[in-house]
Image 1 (cartoon, rainbow, N blue to C red):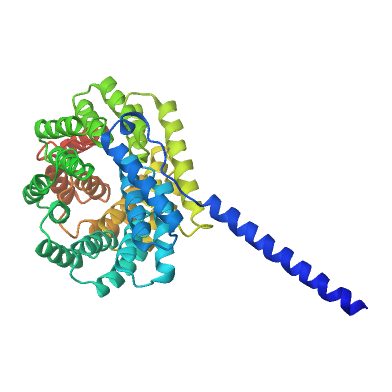
Image 2 (cartoon, rainbow, N blue to C red):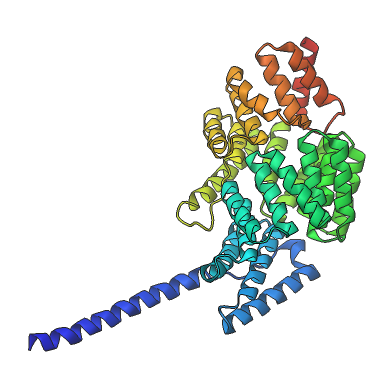
Length: 445
């Protein structure tokens, strides 16, 4: 009798357990079902946005009818990746894109397009070593695709293997000479100190693009930055202005124009354009520039408040990566500079070294560690990192000024003078306080 009761009871418990698992799975799926977010401001008014919205709706409908449609999953992933670039909402759209990519890879682990997107998303999250490994796997599957070589260029640059980045750049441009390959050549030339060559390549990239496209106007803004670093503010302003005409409300062009106003000591307009940029997309860079502007104009409380917001937000994003493999943006280098802005050099060093441990050959990371040690009054500790940062003969005026100040601090007047002279040679558009500090130091050398 007891056995007769036991078996039906076991069956009931089993059914209940299965139902519970199904409900949990269903809820989890619903919670991680991503949709296109509403854009804001001028970004919501473009025809491009209407086309993007229609495409996303069509792809979602296809996937509802055919959940295993890999082509639509990958198309949706590509759409999310592009939307992240346009809106700056990388945290949300990286998760959205990674979900689609992983769905494809679960049933087709060697899918070239899915691996390419996964590598790209990893780079977006600053998981550079992971991105490099996935990109190498993708290249093994298809070694004749220009786009994968572009990802390999970016990943190797970030990991500090510049010679390999050049090799991959040559492969990329030989397969497809276009905006993406020329812009990478430009960046590599800049890393190796060739600003005229960098500007030439970026012009080729610009000519290869379609005016108004996000990628084209990004290149135009990068060309403006190159002109800023070489002291040609007139050309920089021209390109930022054109970018705004071709793509109204483009945040990076607004920020570029704020640099020009700042150089001309028009602080009110500089603040206005930075605030417009900051309100249109999510990018901590704009807030960090606002911190510098407020410090320069004596609004220290305002500067500290914004710096703390940046630190809190970046820290939160990083910590979320511990519980969800599809998000978690490494931002230790950025956090190091953010902590320096509130005069917490100890926390800055903690983050600078964390980034260094991930990619010890990258020149920008080494510059960060050196600069943090300088701000701790430990210039002797900064020297080996500074020398690594200078290994490519990069002529970035900010790096050269940091080098001059560090060498002066350790008593090497000859090198200090050399690097400070180089940094001021073209009157590059860099922070006023740093420039004034260098001018005063030169007088004493």
